[in-house]
Length: 477
Image 1 (cartoon, rainbow, N blue to C red):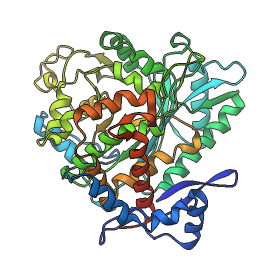
Image 2 (image 1 turned 90 degrees about the horizontal axis):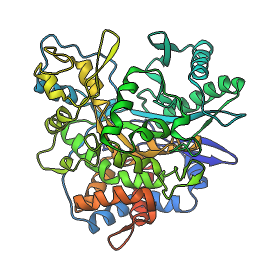
Image 3 (image 1 turned 60 degrees about the vertical axis):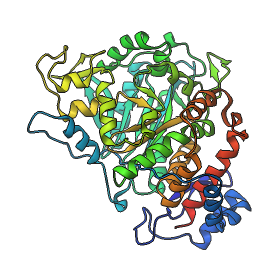
Image 4 (image 1 turned 90 degrees about the vertical axis):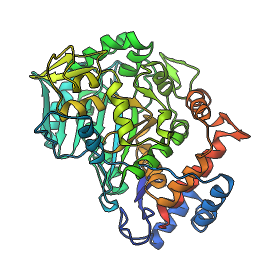
């Protein structure tokens, strides 16, 4: 895999192997060459050699200090092949849909998504939709992207398996393709930033990487012309006080990872949830609101605590012994819907459930039954700290500087794509109680790595976790 390291004033991608069990083809072929070792030492200092040679000691020390706990987890980036139903969908079909994400390890991929705020360089005001449309059209024409339209409005771009889309307040999002290596994800991000900058600079447009809009008021921000956002904007004030801020003033970076089985999905889901507050603390980058300090290190993370409790949070049921694809489907069936999409229009289904839809009893579409596309759309409207589709999404990090966009996938790949590090994380967090996980989730947005945890600070746990991630990126099992 790859990791960003600093060489002089620029950032380069350093190759390395992703840890994998013997006999299993790694996501990246090849080991660490001498030149790579030198680069890693330059990037990480003398601690690199020590940590590289002591992976087994590190794993042993973590396991020794925490009692073991067998878990299960899975993950997988978006599948391009459409799933077509020839008969009415059943609950079992929805379970099978999630299970269809299971992949052999040689098919594991990495998907990275990031959002950013566009602004007028001369005025520091948000881009208007007309400017965003000009930018999208310019990128499409200059770099051969396919335009995505809603009615007569351009709302995004597609090129192969990557896409550019607009969040409700015009936040510009790259949803990366499922790629084999961190080298490729970094190249994809850098290519995207180059293309956006090439067109935007000519328009007098700049972009800011940060977790929460530091200057603009909510009413300053234009709403994008997407039907689903109109429905969400009307619904949000009914279920929380900060949902509109989430829609209009936040940016994130996310990582999508695969799983090999239901058991592997559970393991990764649990590890991801337990460590999500650490990712939030490490990437916290939203301390300002409307030009003033807001009292948070991650205002973006705090906002999710009062957006809509039906579809957010730490999902304590994931740690139940009975958890699996079936239990996640039952959870999703009862999360209130936002919409259904029919005849190129979004139909308001707020407050209704997919369980009603499955039974043909959806008040907004009486007698109609759902398709797989309806199910896929519904899953995208659920926003826990880790989200399950046919892959797992790690959702806890703030948007940030461009040089850090490759750091989040490196962090999660090092922890979750290596069997030893994954087990070490599960051992480390096995006796964390639901109350402790919830406490970390709620306090980290304010106190970050200085959050008290047991007999120390969260930063002490984070240090061990980072060592695991780093070592397992560089030293195959």
